[in-house]
Length: 317
Image (cartoon, rainbow, N blue to C red; front, top):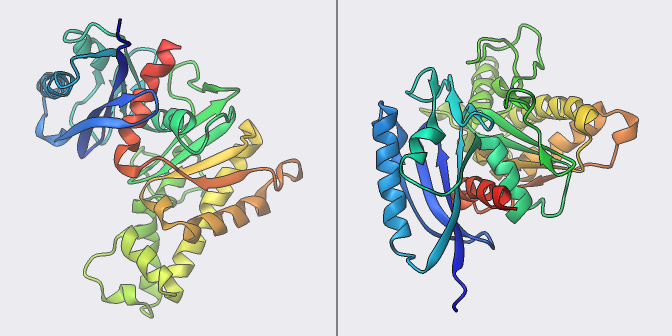
C-alpha cells in the first residue's frame, strides 16, 4: 500500500489579497493562488470563489490526503470560527466564516487571527522551531502580534488576547483606527513610520525624502540605507517606540525570542539594532541580555499560507 502524502490547506485573508495554497509537512508550499479580497463585498460569494480555487489546487494532488484547513484573518476568533468587526474588510459585524467553509469541505477547519497564524508558522517551520516562549510581531499596515507561552498560543477568554499593536505608548498620542489614541501601531508600522516621516519633514526639508511625490516605508528605508540623516532619525524614533512597547510586553510573558515580520522588518538592522538597543534600555534588570530579536525566516511570499496551514497540523497533533 502506498503511503499517501499528507497536505494541509492554508488560507490567509488580508485587506487587499487573499492567498491560499497546499502545504506539506515540511513546510513547502506546493501550489498556491490568490484573489482580491475587496472584489467580494458579499462574504458568501467570497467563500464560494475561494473554495473553487482550493478545490482546483486539490484536484492536481489526487493521491494526497488533505488533513485539514487553517485560515488566518484579521479580527478572527479561534473559539467561535468568526471574523468580528474587522476594520479593514468589507464584511461588517460578525461573519461565521468557518461555518460557511464547512458547507464545502469535510475536513477540520480552524480559524485564527493572521498574527497568531504567523506565530505558529514561525514555530513550526521558521525562526522559532523548538521555542516554547515567543512573540511574533508583524509590522505591516498595522501592527499584529501572536504570543506563544509554554508552547501554546495565548487566546484569552474571548479569543482576542495578545494585541500588542493596541498597547498605548503615548498618552493622547496619534489617533488610531481602533478609536483610541497613542497605540503602538500608530508609530511602529508601515503607516506609522510614514506619519513620522511627514512630521519630521514638516520641521526639516534636509532629506532626499523631501523631493518624493509620495513617501512609503520602503522609500524611508532606502534613504536610511544611503545614510540620509533624517531617514535614520525616523528609524531611530520608530525603534524607540517599538523597543518601549516590547520592553513592557517582555515584563508580562518573558519570551525567549521576538520575531519581527512584514514590510518594516525587511529593513533588517535599520530596525532590529536600534529596537534591541531601546528595548534593553527600558527592560527590567531580570530580563536584560536574555531576549533575541530576529527577523522572520519564512519566505515572505509563502509565509501567510504557511502560518495558516500550521493551524491544521496543530489541530491534527
